[in-house]
Image 1 (cartoon, rainbow, N blue to C red):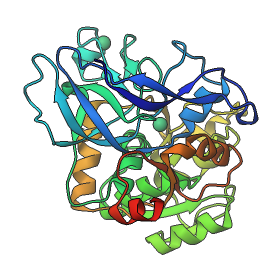
Image 2: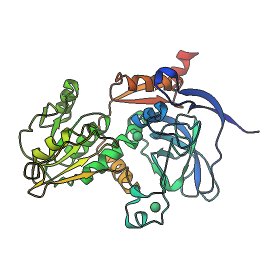
Image 3: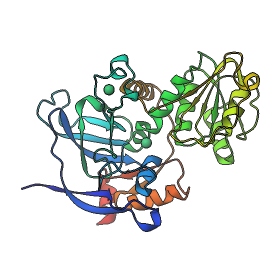
Image 4: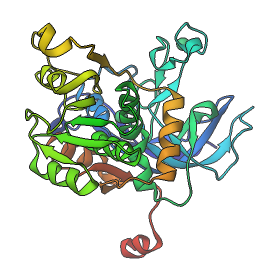
Length: 348
Ligand SMILES: [Zn+2]
Ligand SMILES: [Zn+2]
């Protein structure tokens, strides 16, 4: 007899008001060769989930379960999955598989693999009691941190970490952070722990307050000139108008990395004002597994302060609606399978 589980699927992509998500019963998935079955503890909510639900990101298959920031435990091992054991705490992230053979994969740039597949887009994700993951793409996680604080690291943290690498911040350097949402606030903490001087530039007054609390040297408006020239900058706000602003703020030889998938059009650049003196403009595309491991290792040594808003699993659609309406403080997380005994008593 097949066991079933509760899951949310994207039934008809559209605005959140049209209820694109539906709560259903699905068979518990069978781990394929090399995969493990994961019992989900917490799944964080990413803006990409919202893009998928609302149809901004075209579905790759019908009725997919979204969610790609999963903290859970191995519940069963498929054939040949011998490197993880039942009960091990693991994370499941956006990058689900790569071909391992193309010129990008073989050069250590698997984030650019044209055959890569993604959790919660090409395959069912973590808005469910169970999902499967290849043992090669699962991240072992520490036991001593709450799942709610670990889950947002698995996308917001990892992507921001790669953006920081791409910005080539020199040791002890001066970093500009443009925009200060979930990913930026984690990335700024990585840079601070590495000894950087961080200047945050964002339109949000509350985000500026948080930046200073976390140790930023300054916090200004998005279009302000930082108090000193920058060795590196990361643009998290999806605003192309900020590209020349950030380039102009770079010191000689500085690098600007654009972290987002989407960016509004970049206005014309002026060669001497924005690029000469060997300033560099770069994009950031997804991440490699090495980026993920490096970020999680860093977070184990320097646990970041992660601001989260928790939702019960039954409220996944509400979490996405709140995200769409900018009503979420920090990262929204779904408590799927970690109901505490106290909560159970309360519910009883
Ligand atoms: Zn994401
Ligand atoms: Zn490849």
